[in-house]
Image 1: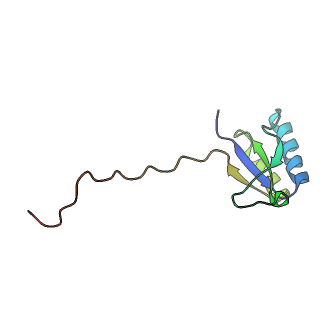
Image 2: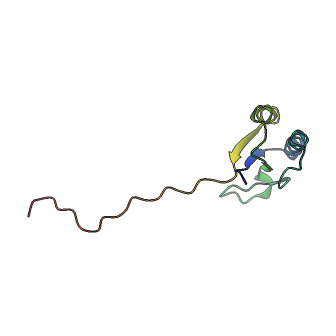
Image 3: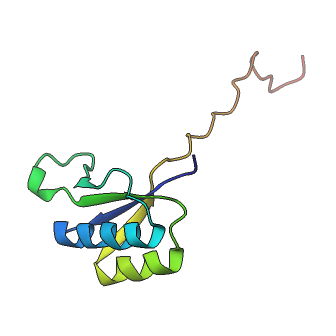
Length: 98
């Protein structure tokens, strides 16, 4: 399964319209449908944006037009793992010759 795209919208009607348009274009149901997205630190449910999880195979040109028309933005559903830290030294560094 490839990466999915997450589109965010301020209004539920916009999210539903984009979900329906993408479902017609892909000829499949949009995964997850329309639901509220949560951002870290927001505790008021009315402030959460609406989100639609879209398949990665969605045509980027059509998706860009839909996002522009409905005032939305896009993010990847699966973030890459954080980079691994550099290995720690096994012994102290010597600044002067012994």
